[in-house]
Image (cartoon, rainbow, N blue to C red; front, side):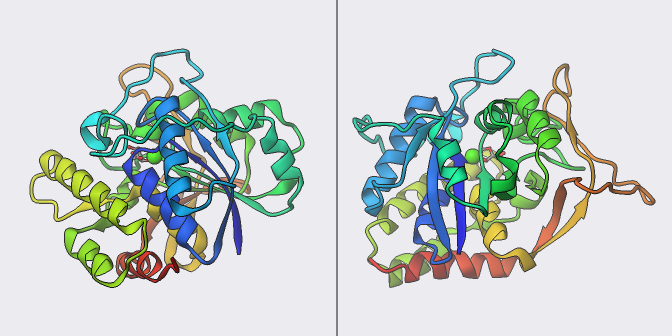
Length: 310
Ligand code: BDR
Ligand code: CA
């Protein structure tokens, strides 16, 4: 069983990642930290709370993350991909419950010895955790980050991917302070495409109450991606792939390299690693995912969602 703390900015693919984690028999979600990113922090909190409630997991601690990047810049949001409130056509009610304090994360970490942190949004809140807490490393087993784009175009500028672009200062803090990092970059996650045919396979077999929500989100997200990338058969579940590779360590191929992120100028958010032949890694360098078993991911996604007990 993998015990995880999930840092997210739901957002459609984050929301499907949250549902995948809740439905996965080998993942235990210890807490969800919701921050700005695809949407405002408030909407990210409302969306995560809505999903936990629909899934019957309202007891999982909800932690309010961050409102804006460490640079103090105003965040950019992406309603054209994720919908006006981050959940495609859905508008969840405002969250009326109690948010846990950010400092509760330290208690949660200290209560365990082998927590995996999965950050599928801007790295601001995770950077705060490292800046404020000096003694957390022994409690963290691995850190999985969805972020960066290597040797291919980005998705928010010619060279930058949205999560590293959204707060490159925070990304560098996490990359420098933490060990045992796995990076699942955009050039890899873009291949994790789920199509309407895959969703139809799920809806034909499952009457789980989350499945109609997944279908509504995927219909919206697929249309948005097909407008963005004519000819694409579905839409990439960047954040779900990150969880899949966390829980299926043998299904990805990685190389260790030092990574840094450009913090300003035209190249802001660009992730840099040395892939030249003959370049070397040092102990503690992040493992960068290069490729994964695409069909195994698709099969696992369909199976995990369709076979989850109600
Ligand atoms: C990442 O940015 C967001 O749009 C997605 O949720 C994903 O985490 C892809 O660049
Ligand atoms: Ca995300």
